[in-house]
Length: 87
Image (cartoon, rainbow, N blue to C red; front, side):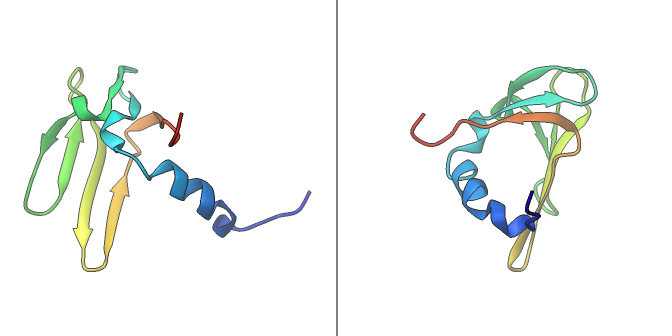
């Protein structure tokens, strides 16, 4: 089996993130609740955004903008279910 680095996933990742992510389904690592990302409760506007589970209030994801990049932390989700374009 040939070993490849993460760049080999570029096409797959581009396909995944070429849609409205708010329609993706998450599963909360804290309580196991599953729902659309658009249903998360949003906190913070200035420094970044913190999205919490509406059932247990745990942080599911956070997003911070920096010059020329975005930091996305999804460690509060045990799973993200992403629809593929054209499906």
